[in-house]
Length: 292
Image (cartoon, rainbow, N blue to C red):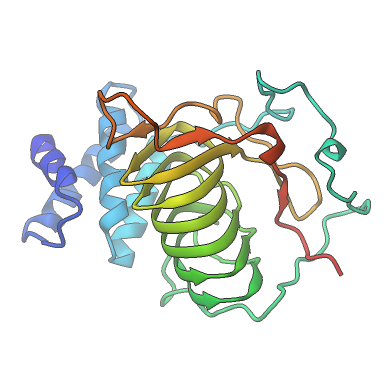
């Protein structure tokens, strides 16, 4: 059964659906339920199969089933009690980044959107879509779901700045140009397709980027970055202020400066398609209210 699902995982880019897809998913979900209270080596393999299924599943009911199974199998990472430290950079106060100081707040302010929120929730499902935005600056503050996290889909964004301040489980982005996207940390995978001249602030277990160029990833991740058909990718650490003005903390187990796996250069030598941004290019963004 696992061999058949792994073959299906390798063919995930093909838009063909087989008649036994639903049966295969049921088998994996049953296996996930059995492993939830176990610690065998099959647990990680089942998690990978479920995450692959989640990336291509469009049925909202099945998405919810898969996500609940993943929540049972995979415990949430524990947040650190202090900001993550980098070997390449001594600890510095936020002011060292030369951003104007935020006014002190006795409590987190009630978030207000810079523009009207788009009604993106799909028929009560856990999918939230942001799409078709050109030349705007917006913040998206709320997206409700049963477990407090959503599957976020972002597509066709041009010449815009978007701040997404609510928690997400996984994120899929497509067709992003000349824009800045600042995302609240995600608890699972992040996928980027066809990005050009983009600044992306994100945190996920794994980050995949395809067919993209001249894009900077201000990122943190647990397992790694996978690249394919990309040029001019820069890496910098994830430094984002929450709506309360405090630096968002990440897990001590997260990585920020590890080399990505470039599928176009496996075993090859020569100019790389990515590099670490100069420290002068490391910047801090924010999810909070826009300046008056």
